[in-house]
Length: 254
Image (cartoon, rainbow, N blue to C red):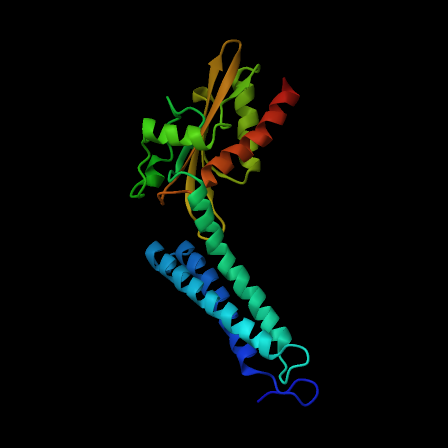
């Protein structure tokens, strides 16, 4: 059995706890990355994530036992390993738990727009959504009611600028968000783009519509996930981030 400094032996419990934590972290990362790169289905990835949670729980329990055995003044060493195992296990466990908490705090919808009565429509992106579980058609009043209750601050942007100038600012903002621009048609006031999430690589589609409004213009934006019943608030956060960047640019140009 391995020895640290002095005569006390390293408790194997601390080593086992650390190993479990590392394996859980690797499995959790692989669950999303494997789906992103087409190595397995979404169901397989979620299954791996479920077992990752079990592994993280085991790692925390075993590491806590290892820390107790290797506590200062005890007969065994390995406290550092146990603490690292506890930390890694807690982080790995915390990620899916944060998703679960978010799912409970937001409505189970995946299509957010600043105009729930007449939402912007996808055109150029439609071929890219072929076969996607979530259809491109808006869900209607039921979805609108849930959005308005959960995200009342998501509203259109109004500008004193003509549509062409508003379009240019909107396109620059979309590009700065890191979205993949699929279509930008000034004559129609329409911008379409796709955003890819980092870990799982989920594809969410965005359409921006700019129309004349009085002597100025109005901008509406819609963001919809291709897969998933709930987006965990991702589409609303995306729209909010866009508007937070766009509105100061707009104010500086008016």
